[in-house]
Image 1 (cartoon, rainbow, N blue to C red):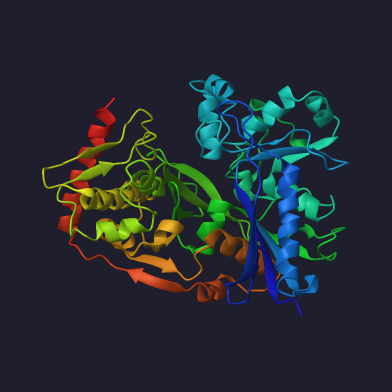
Image 2 (spheres, helix red, strand yellow):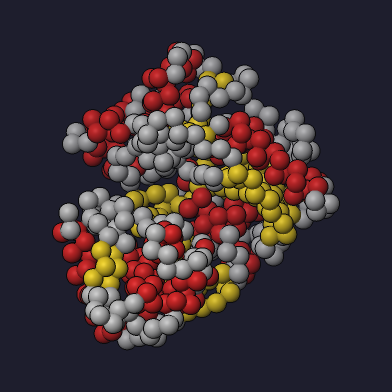
Length: 498
């Protein structure tokens, strides 16, 4: 009997393959890293064949080491690094060039030519995204313009492309299926987020032929079945696909408008469910498609914002300042004082992201006195991680004209109880930390499970999603307001400090 979901989490530095049980919790997982390629300053590439190899090895490992047969797998779910693109030969499956990674800045000059023109407004209006090399459209264009013979082959229908999810679907199905889901497609700048389809005007702006691209389908549904693989039997359905941040939102069971999740990593990634209507931001946030479920015509949207420096601020305390030996020590150090006593750290170490968007801002520590010491700065660092998330979430509330219902948290720093309490205090909202902390994997599994009725509906998934710990505000609204005013004065100083 098919009793497990096989989840593939294809990330920027490695691939994790997990076996997920009906309870929603993982039975086992295997992670394998792959090489990062930096051919020129600011350029980042991956070998798509190497990525595919990590998927195969990972699947073999989790099955063999746990005595699981391929026949025990009900369905496969995929979540992936989002804007990274790969183009491959339709017959041989061989990539025509390395995958160009979301971090790659090689298309900066082209993107600059679009800014200030009418095309910039068209792109933002139709995609909810800002013009930036981060997104996929200009990357596809670069491959077609710079790889010998690529454009001619595209016109002759000899090559196809997509984001990493579509490459994996194509490989897993033995070249039978060329599909992507709405969440990944919404990050390409080639899909109209209102129609959920490739947009002719956007394709023309980026000079990308439609026949190069995969068919766009719901995040939960029929992507194809396995075929011709040495490590899995034929016929296992691939029934769930979503970009990593959207998968995390679904994995956190943020199914209603106003529900949000924050992933605490190197930076912090916040997505808030904005419901069935497109909410374009006036606050420098991105509008994205969150998901579409099988059988539903309506798309669900989200607002997205991120702070560049989150966990990286703690790494800075550890590596450059040598305040602590390991990152987890920051909580104990910060607990040595009951307050930062006026010390404020604005961690604008790489400029400021949403909602300020000031690349020239510089990190500052203010409010130091003769009595200030390491513990005050450690506490101010944790407070800054929470406070910058408040700025983003309040911008989301303003754009949506709806209050935050609660915040669900994941990522490495979510294990820090002091930080989570600060987040609750400064937001004046309840914070929920789930049992299943690997929320991207959870989301991919839920999408796949719904696609084959492994779980009957989102109501059943709500029961699967379980709280590990809840944090409630312990300060008053007046105290919160005073703290935010103090923080924003410091942010203003950081923005003046260049």
